[in-house]
Length: 473
Ligand SMILES: *Cc1c(COP(=O)(O)O)cnc(C)c1O
Image 1 (cartoon, rainbow, N blue to C red):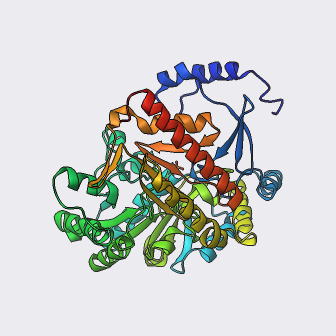
Image 2 (image 1 turned 45 degrees about the vertical axis):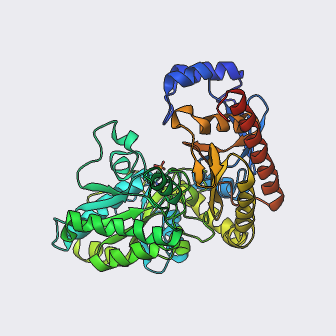
Image 3 (image 1 turned 135 degrees about the vertical axis):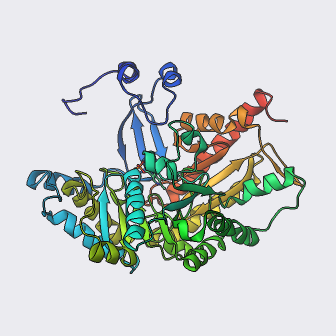
């Protein structure tokens, strides 16, 4: 550790943490009782905490460390750029070589309709930019009443006022009077949950392909309800990440695209998680077969080594902003930050030179899918889904012939399982009773074998624990 930060005991770090640091999405008091785990260093796919425990980071930090930890090319890019030009803005009719080179690189690796980028510092800021761009576009076309943006319940688009409004997390909306006006939500393409509800209502379950069409048509219903001349855009994640790694049926996105085309509505792909190889293509829209007009990115663009986000602006929209727009009254001090852009370039170059996308698509993506499929025989596992290098398993109470039965959400079974994962050196996240992973894309087959063995071990320990607590019969 550097001299600047110094050495302290775990306990001393925890006490100072509690005294001064308000963590994101955290019950402060509950954390104060427990104390944070202090992550001190990392290499490849492993973290190390101040107690010396080695932890397999199956969440890539927070869905972002796609190339793994300790990549010298990214470290060198930051060091070199810090020395040469640590900052300059792009407000004063000025620019910097790393920002230009990254914009050019992004235009080259994104689908052909994208030739322009607007830089931000995070996914939330990127999605706030989306709201500004989308509304500006329709204003310039003389349709200012087209301001409504449709997104999905249980989608995640960030935590700023705009991002949290686009997000479909009702517990977020409940704090702060959200959503802001002009944002409305439709149901998510979550087959497992949909069929649970159908069964509890005594209705027959629905097949996957049919459900994909059905869920997409909720968009059309909403457009007709709001009025087609008032709807500006639809935004969605190709695969919902924070909502629980919900992989939509293959029939879903093509139908969404058809509906957006039919009503002339802009399609926005939130690629903050799915971008930069996560699904086995450069971008999730390529895996899902859509042609978005705008694309939000962040996280994987720098593999999380430094904050950077932004929006790819398709030519349909860019042309109007450029040719008819005059001054666009929006931007961030750090839009196109030279150090962040230099790191992003090094990250993308590394992904290209190591053929990381092909590695996910052809080798470890299918290998992980196979591993997760094999978990179906575990008594606690009622559903599994995966796409590229993200996967989910749903913990269930029983698997009778009439279908899986879930636990009472109040029991917090997902959190119990997460506790066993943390205790056994594995970071796996719980979203309700859905256990999710999104590991670094550099994983080898041997590392996936190790991870699957850990997952199985933690499921077994969870089962024993539930029996002891009389939660399993
Ligand atoms: C994480 C995330 C965001 C928000 O990004 P921040 O950098 O945390 O602001 C937006 N959209 C998606 C899909 C995300 O996963």
